Amino acid sequence: MRISDPNLIGRLTELRVELRQGAKLSELTSLGIGGTTDLLRITKHETIPDLLQLLDANHIPNKFLGGGSNLLVGDGELLWVVLQLVPPESDVVLEGNFAHVDAAADLGRTVTFCAKRDLGGMEGLIGVPGTVGGALRMNAGAYGMQIGSYVREVKLYRAATRQIETLRGHQISFEYRHTSFAPDDMMLAVILELPSKTYNEILKGIRICNEKRRSSQPLGQKSAGCIFKNPPGASAGRMIDELGLKGLSVGDVRVSDRHANFFVNAGHASAKDMLALIADVRERVQKAYGVALENEVVVWNA
Ligand SMILES: Cc1cc2nc3c(=O)[nH]c(=O)nc-3n(C[C@H](O)[C@H](O)[C@H](O)COP(=O)(O)OP(=O)(O)OC[C@H]3O[C@@H](n4cnc5c(N)ncnc54)[C@H](O)[C@@H]3O)c2cc1C
Image (cartoon, rainbow, N blue to C red; front, side):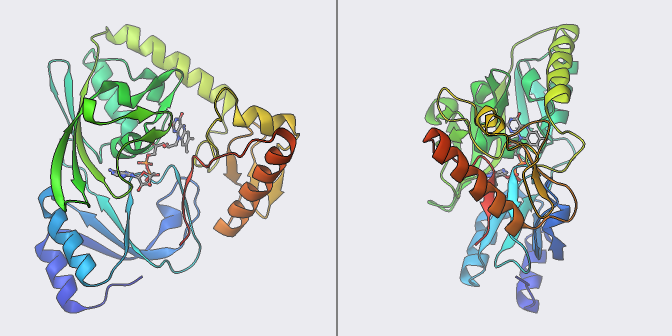
């Protein structure tokens, strides 16, 4: 979708929104898949209510992009524009055991920034790409920890009220790859309360997690992490592996040889190929185990 009305472009400039016309989503997602649309980069949180109202008034549908590491975006010219936050210069500010973090901050850099100042707890998140906002949306986690455990407050734009609001930690429920945020809530900033640990102790934990990732995941290849959520008490990857599906491919998309729940783009894969492989694997697992696998990857295909 393209924004061409000069009045609208002028209004976006007034709202300090950077317009990047014809952005390729394949260059903004870790899978390297996705078509083209206009990208609107938001530099001031306070302008979001006016921006969303402006887009609504002009009938411009939109989707919100974090770091693009959990996304499968459709091919070709996309029917919506994409919004993204620009991180401020200083995106993590510490106050005792509390870290005030902008949602656009890089998750890995946030974990190391805090670690170097003797604040730990998030060691398992090292190696999870993307932004802090994206991690909040999905309650990102690994190796027995999840970001939700440390959330004390979230500043967010709520489409339901068209306002920027603040939620306390106890008002939000964080479950396995699921949160109580509304689908159109836009997380803007978070306060995390992190336990004090020495940097050396945190580093030890980080090294263990890094090693586990390196030995089990196709880190050098384009992927979106796990395609499916683990069903209660089971492992989606193990089921796919047991069915001998590692290496199964459609076009340039294949089930990773390293981790059966990672589907990699081994060349110039399309969303169509990826969706076909996801459907095929889901059907085989359903037939063999009677389990309907649910996507962990977020699909933007309509
Ligand atoms: C190699 C690899 C390893 C991974 N390992 C893990 C892992 O161990 N554990 C894990 O949980 N995940 C893992 N992931 C998946 C992914 O990195 C996480 O889900 C990450 O938190 C997504 O953040 P993002 O900023 O990239 O979100 P995006 O992919 O940009 O967006 C994902 C969804 O979140 C929404 N979103 C993003 N930012 C915001 C915001 N500020 N406000 C509201 N909604 C927002 C988007 O609209 C979209 O619906 C892995 C991915 C890769 C590629």
